[in-house]
Length: 268
Image (cartoon, rainbow, N blue to C red; front, side, top):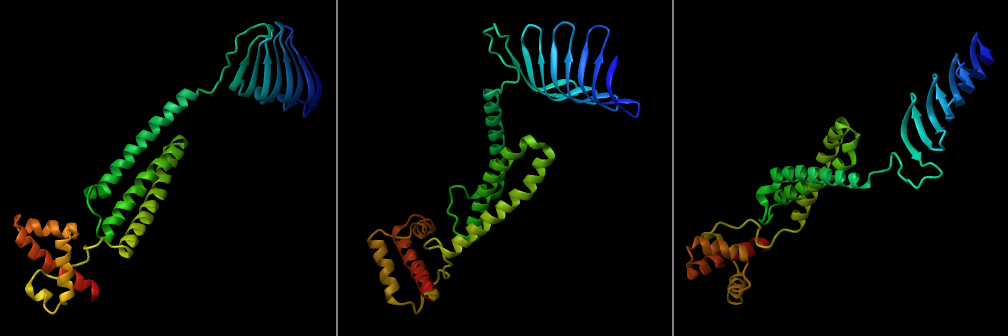
């Protein structure tokens, strides 16, 4: 039985619907269906107060059981969404449905971070792994090194922020952000090495007597002083020592020639 407002021969507006078994609904209707705010009262004593849409519980609502327990939260198509169950008034049970699993969230976050760190590490090694443990003397070498680190960091950041948004969003973000970070890192490293070269790594003049002909005696004195005071350019000394097959005298002579060439080049 329905008592209430009609529109186009259908229950629309405020009304009351009563059934033979004692079930009763009081609230809003639209096009013949429960829609809006309303209250359901059941024969067994249960009661629902909340929102409806197209004849079903949808929106904010509270279901109260005959024994005093309550279910409160968001409903959708008659089903609970993110609802919590309150204990009976005389019960010491404090368990709540939908309680946030903090431990599970932390574990998931840890595994996600590790996964993207591994991916970033693989990309880093592919880009600049050959320079690991070596001096990045040339601008492009330091550029690749800094660019690789930028890729490593951006993969972890972008992955951590977008993995829960779906594969499509994750891939698009990676494509847009990671290459940009690489370019910024590469340019920064390249410019830095251009402005601040490693000592002794500027192009040297060929290691022949003619390459140092006309060089100032000051350069020879400086090279000799570096040897006698053990403040040689370690990289250059190691190369001369290796090329001389461990012969110290030959290595010293080679060091002086090449160091004079470098000093002359720096002053030119």
